[in-house]
Length: 217
Image 1 (cartoon, helix red, strand yellow):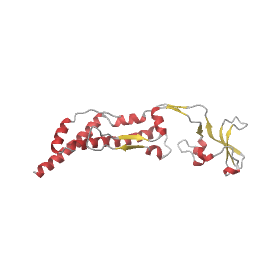
Image 2: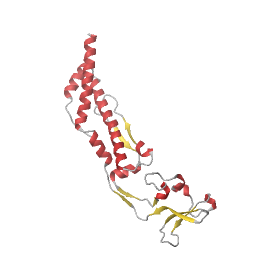
Image 3: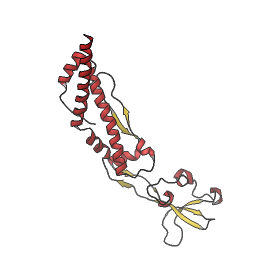
Image 4: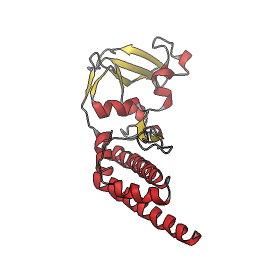
């Protein structure tokens, strides 16, 4: 949550004298401007700090609440991320991730997403027969020979080859906090910017409303 105190009472007096709704409109504009700008800044931060493999991660960051109404004491705007992955990156903690995809499942490119056929919900029963899985049999264990490690393996090439598609961990994975979300907001929604956005909009409304006021006279 961002809090900023600034001198706007003089604008409140002038705006209310000409148009009682103008002050609330300037506050509303300022809150929504800062939320939308913070949304963009957070997305840029995510692209710099993390490997983004799908659009879902970026699209999960959005302004989901806009400031509305005329009661400035109850107005608020909000930016959130609905991604569980990003919330863990922000605050840190432990993740009970037992299986970790190998580079093979990402076409040997760490920046690519796991191919659909190798996702956990697609590989099915590890004990399934080679032919029952369309030429790909998956099993959990440690193959004999060549110092092979424990994990989920795939039989392929007419059952003549084995390729590891998942590493299996028995311990929790520790995720260090990055505070990327909070830091991105603080860099954008500074006290200076809060004042500039409000003053600029308030001055514009004063000019417009005063011009209309004297024109109507």
